[in-house]
Amino acid sequence: MTTIGTPLSASASRVLLLGSGELGKEVTIALQRLGCETIAADRYDNAPAMQVAHRHHVFSMLDGEALRSVVESEQPDLIVPEVEAIATDTLLALEKEGYRVVPTARAAWLTMNREGIRRLAAEELNLPTSPYRLRNDADYRAAVEAIGLPCVVKPVMSSSGKGQSLVRTEADIQPAWEYAQSG
Image (tube, rainbow, N blue to C red; front, side, top):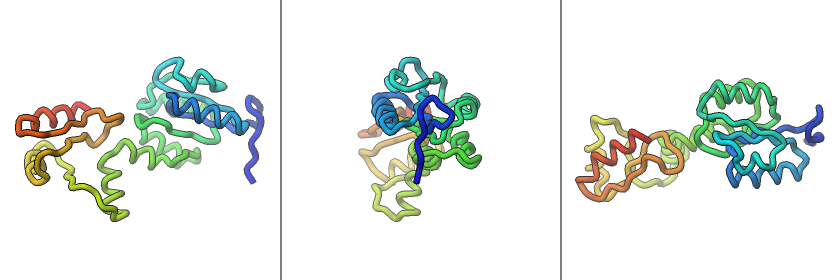
């Protein structure tokens, strides 16, 4: 049986939430109702979950050193990634070192890595997917031609739809590629 300690005490069950938006606020409130000590983190101050958490930290979660520093100082029992934009290599390393990440660090990595999630779905799980190609600059146009128009161009790594374009005409092809590379 899992025992939950008392917040702000030596026996506390500490949960570090990486991402402190509205969803993070709801998760924080639910964790507190269960008796957990909550620590909210995000890239901007006064994020919604920070308003109700026991403590908070402001840093870029894409900064692996800053992420590691917060985890090592807080010593959480659980790390909960709530956003996609996280230094996933650091999160994977922390998990290997014994920190518990829920969902796993690999799951957080997959949410950011379009190639990884596509390969998992299509190749490992054999799920039906729409036609796709993973390409570089040299064979991008051939991939668009193979799929046909209209098609969607997405960067391999992105969050919140950044870098995605709907390509309807030949004139959209190059600007879509450039936008995806900037995302």
